[in-house]
Image 1 (cartoon, helix red, strand yellow):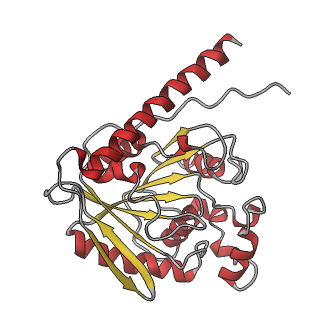
Image 2 (tube, rainbow, N blue to C red):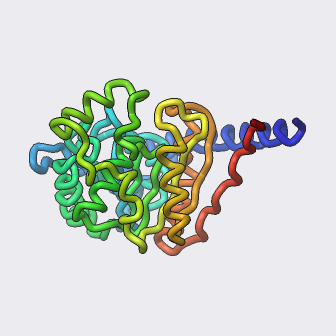
Length: 280
């Protein structure tokens, strides 16, 4: 009991620190620091809105990250907030697309990834180094890797929803998935079934919570972690707490640290200790 209380207290302290840094990042990004805010370049590719946001200040981007939004997200999802803003403050450019909205990794979204990558690299003047994904974006990004898009050096997946036949708890997901594929999910487009085919030289980091009530860890992030670990790949994980939308998932400290590692400017963030299993 004492160990559990201490662990919970440590987690609360970390969450308070993350919240404080997030508030500071909001202030800094809005100009409180006196630094120049990053410019935003917008466009349209194959009918999809796209954007790339340049880093704060005047320096050339250190790297380019692509963000893959979740179900119900948009081209602007989270990029102007404190989480992805941490990358912008750290010198990154961040690009995104509408990715055919609730596409769930269908063929159209894979073509979107290819088009966005070429466009964003031209606008930012730097190659893509990092893919950052949220929920449904996990399926969009992994299917792109599996179906012809150039894999990134680094992939950061937050609560990745990759078991497409196990999404009944996500409101509307069954209907959106059927619409995206015109029926049942094709076997080759269910990424959880093709983890063994993911690229060997990409470095992976997974952020997930055992308390996620919508995208169950065991069938999604857990499957990804266990299978990539079994292959001996470079994968680490950051275990957070709370339900699917808990703010602990969006940790700017962890994201920026992984970005630094991706660019060779810092050590790899370590994996967290797995949560204690209940008896029985």
